[in-house]
Length: 465
Image (tube, rainbow, N blue to C red; front, side, top):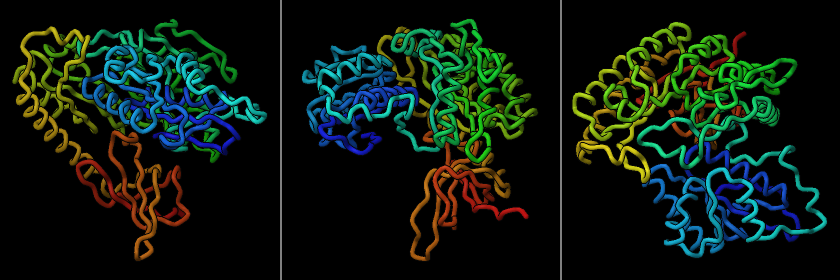
């Protein structure tokens, strides 16, 4: 159960939230809770204290749907008064067939409908204190730690990938105004955010639907375009006068991505790109309905690293897509050996109801998917091990996520991340013997002493005189 509680108000209704799925859904949950708090609701950290429970579902894969259904069942068993929202909202019949007691079901990012459903299920208190509740513009509910925040720049997607139903769930691309995005980012940084994680379904396509309209901001006229947005975010400063880390996710490798690499080399952007390649074999990419210019991408990656040697590239790949041959899979492995990507996630192909890929011939047997997945992970783990070993002896900036309690000897450990590590999906940096003054959100220089396949180990470097 996620929560963000303030001091209780007499007779104040309480809402619990279970948020599943990707960071984009987490942002939806934050916006819903922010609106509800402005309407006089408090957040409940558990089922027992909630007047109603919201379950924000994920509907991308069948396994995710099952997890969502289980979460709905748990909420009904523990509380009984449940409203369902999110990507599974389009499958209301399926949800009601299993859980007929669900109070209401709404789809992805349908904020007004969710709020209305909560108002009906648990009408807000009308006591004399409700006007004192902060409005969304004053203080936004965050479901992440104070020092990092997701910044969603658009909804939906214009692609028609054969394995994906996101356009059906979230619609076509709908970009936010760039001044609205920058205003939100500025407020987040002013409130203590040290790291902004830019997210969307397709960050590179930001502003395509609005023809990259311009808006006035700080005496400038930036376009709704990824490069303009990145440049403006690089101008923000924390309370300490330092630029926040700005991390780009879901970046399709369109030609204009080349323009953000110099911004990383200049220190305006975190040298990190999350690019959903999905595969490398041209025949598989064609069946996936994705761009099949993998050779050109390799050339561009080499140029990117020449411009910004510390660039980290993370991606994910699907094995066992219908029609994938052993030759296709070996092509992918050879491509990875050449690309030397820093962070790689792997997934076995899983049919999604409504996806075009389900009708493709030559499905790959499950045992073959498992065998290919194991081989993919073996190759990428070896690459990751070598890349992290090369960082031993270097001093790197690390953002602290958690500080532990003293052990029996009084030593304190901490966990953080380097600029190569996004929260929840990449590796971590484990620190020993940190001072008791260290707190979450601090950015410190760390001497790297050791490494394994995924994580780094080190100690805070002595201050330079």
